[in-house]
Amino acid sequence: MTYSLLSVPLGSFQVNEILSPEDIAESNFDQASQPLMKSIKFSLIVPTYNECKNLTKLVEILTQLLNSYFYENYELIIVDDDSPDLTWQVGLDLMPNYPQLRVMRRQGEKGLSTAVIRGWQSSQGEVLGVIDGDLQHPPETLIKMLDEMAKGADLVVASRHVEGGGVSDWGFMRRVLSRGAQMLGLLILPNVIGRVSDPMSGYFMVRRSAIANYPMNPLGYKILIEVLGRGNIGSVAEVGYVFQERQEGESKVTWRQYVDYILHLLRLRSRGRITKLREKLRVPVKRFLKFGLVGFSGVFVDMAIFYLLSDVSTLGWGLTRSKMIASEVAVLNNFLWNDLWTFRDLAQQQSGWRKLIKRFVKFNLICLLGIGLNLIILNLLYNYFGVNKYIANLIAIAIVTIWNFWFNFKLSWRVTQTK
Ligand code: GDD
Ligand code: MN
Image (cartoon, rainbow, N blue to C red; front, side, top):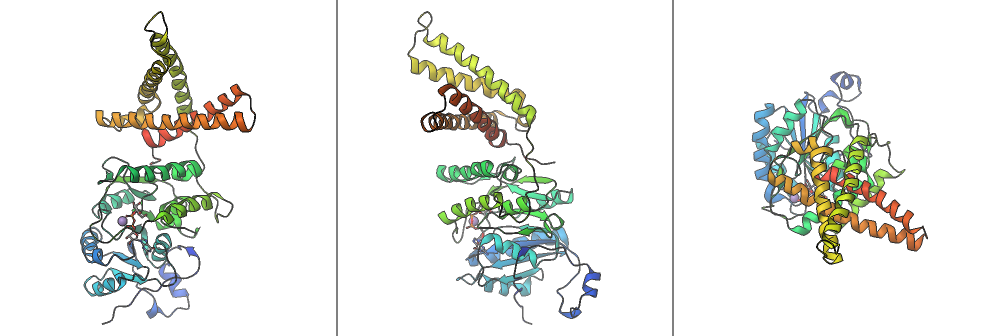
């Protein structure tokens, strides 16, 4: 028996609906040449490039896991971009032992996101998934994700940033870069990036009906952004997972992926988008007002402490020292009120001292960046545009308040729009 490669769909990157048996009967196709058309519940894509050392183990684990969940009513599709290490050949050699396995060898086209879409295009599943081919995404998480799908979610994201999620041992720089990319996304595409806690995740599943017939045009690595931006995604669920360290092979990420990511965000933003972004930004007015009020209270705390420390009639400390302490006490004041009032519901979902301190540290960092932004805006308005000093300062304060609110909402207290 020979095992053949799955053919690569060509043309536009659009996932279509599954053909119903009637559609097939009516079409002119020779019935026998049709791919097997029994209804398949789940199609999982594994994009690979030079993963020959990981593939065998991955396929074995995934098959075992999915067999017990679906009783073989699923398919596992490897989409390999003609890897020099012959990953696709390894996949082909595995096929005799794994009836659910299919392999695609792409030539002429390249890139992680498009590989995933090509895989989905040639799949039959009602639910479409993707998982990295290097075992950095723990396969067991799939089961929790499938359970969320069964409860009715349109999209389930495996997230490093919710309960049970994390990274194994990432250095400071890598964390900063990852969070920086997320913040950039929250600025450029708030309505899309703000919907999930981990928009960088490449481990997720989506209902075919939520993306069927919406043209896609992805770029680079972050296929989830494309799905969120162009699909018609109703309810979103998230499941925590810990991003594992790579045991074999190496990451393909270079500076190029960061550039592609920014271009991808801009493409989704610009007129060039094929479909209108479906998700309108919902402004949490009430929360923002509360946040503003808390910020206002901080002014008085700052003033009072500043007076107590620096005034000659009291302690008479130096100006800088007094101001630094006064600011930090005000930050603490604001944090506590926000935690107890503005974001109370979110804080309650993350109880314990450790998490409280984590929120406080993040709040400090974001407010610190806010001060930097304040200085930049003030300088720009005053020195370059000749705006009146006080008006410039008011504008800067208003912008920084929005900045502080948005990033603390999304990163410190971390709300996700799961319904
Ligand atoms: N077909 C194909 N074509 N696969 C690719 C390509 C490509 O051009 N580039 C990378 N891959 C495959 C890799 O073989 C691997 O299975 C997976 O995509 C992820 O690539 P890595 O290079 O290992 O990326 P990472 O470890 O930095 O993971 C980051 O990106 C992932 C994908 O978006 C993290 O952000 C993950 O959370 C995320 O899942
Ligand atoms: Mn990886």
